[in-house]
Image (cartoon, rainbow over the protein chains, first blue to last red):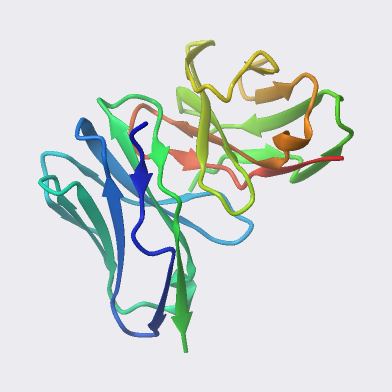
Length: 112
Length: 112
């Protein structure tokens, strides 16, 4: 079936650098996307969302970019900090339904 | 910020036994969810609950699973006869409608 996937399972960045985490989705009907951060021993934590009528949305130190043409979603983290180390999941939603489909996750490691 | 709380944090159960996982969603939320995450894998949707009934469920949520909102604050997931493959983290979540979904920190279920 259609599913959400990720290009890179792990990403290591130097503290202070920018991070880019990518996500590919295959369901062209998906119209709402969320990025979640999951720290060890914790549940997924909402970071930022974007609806399909937008191609960019900015939060505090984070930006989500949506390219519907190639079905690609990315999360950019500016000035990455040690506290950003976690697994990041993208999730897609169709027609504002209740079933979010999560991607497999990317582990972000911030090096000192 | 209000939180979704889950108890217990870790549950160890013999195979074939019944287990009940408990959650207290955020008080003004209307939609409640259970998700499962097998170790090292992605988060999987199990079921959504709205207006005192199941509104959507995945193929994982078979007859062995049930959910209940026994009072105005608790939301439970019951597994009638546990199997080894039920071992996973179980996350409860809630929201006011499709959008920013808040997750609890999970219950680790270990089946022996």
